[in-house]
Length: 88
Image (cartoon, rainbow, N blue to C red; front, side, top):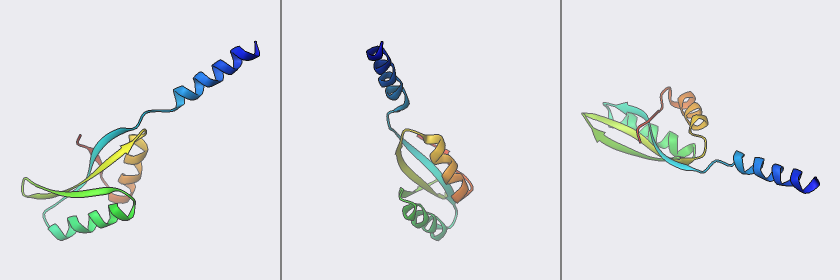
């Protein structure tokens, strides 16, 4: 019986480990390039890889994120930037 219990414990640990997935999250769209660049600096200071994409007359700040818990990342980003949406 003890061995069976060990197997069950091992299975539970495997279930809790989620694989990391790659996401692109947009945290802002600015008319002014300087504001977009400020957002990039803020994101980089938080440890994210950030880029500015020029699209539809806006400078869109997008982050490349690899995580097992995108909801937690979105929560942090919404607090910091006011907005965060998964675009890919």
